[in-house]
Length: 423
Image (tube, rainbow, N blue to C red):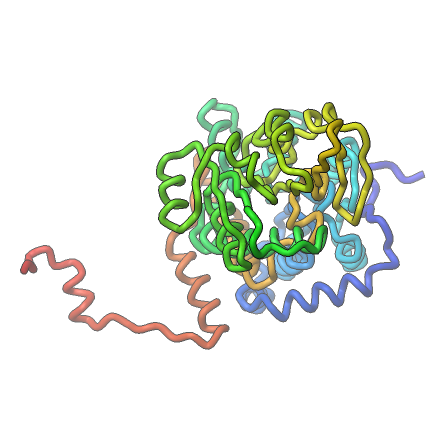
């Protein structure tokens, strides 16, 4: 009998490997930056000797990153960072290519953490996270691994916030690079990727007309702004709710109505939460929503919509479509919840488009490279990638798109730093 530590991988259906390879190949055709990095470092293999444990959505785009890390010499093990975001065909293809992957769609909580633990059986030297579950697992369940780990990286806003809080509390034990804070990540992935993919998930789960609907966005950060922009582009009337004055002001000047969630709950047709905070939609909001209201979440965790509160008000429920459950309340009103309150863009669709993940995962690759080179000399804490890497990644992306930039003349360069020039 094979023990857990001897397992090479666990996926839903290994026979889906051919289907998964097609998906990955398609993503590769849309990700020129990561492919350029793979070509550049495949010969020198600067990650040789590194063992990377990753905990990030198992999508076709993630597979391109995994292939690139492996091409650069790393031994890679992987688990999904969300129980509903794994593409089983992609997971099967990666397993067939020798990746130590432990991921399948629809995991329960026990299976989710079991899968993370299996990636840690390989005693990683680097960790790569989306939401910080892997890093927390190391810190609280596997402290014996600290002697092997050089450093880690974190992909998303929520995870970076958690890690900064952990560092401030003196509990973080190794350096972590905040990939999310790279401009070519947060200002593109979070805005354009989240906006398009979240609406894609909503439409796949409901097929509703967005034009003319009151579309309520909870949280006007980068992700919320992206959703608002795309909803407005499809003819929705966008309402934003916020706790931060400057964010609310930005929403106002971008043409959104701004109100409290108590007010928005009465008029909204469709609600999407993008805050990273729990209990954004709770019992009193469900009690005042219209019949037919649709609610979903694009924040990292499933705590933004309090489903227990909704279930207390519910007399019956049924699944109407894939990732769309109807909750009928005692007074006959119906509220529709998408993707069980988890990430609608990944659970009900395919996640961010390959073109935008190209830059995000180029940053992840560069973070692994930086840690392999300098990790032992970095202090414990949350670090940022050098600004120069942002510009390099953006430049490669523009070049692949056939776009050329102006160049400053020597005189202009001198002028930029000449403080003696006046009016």
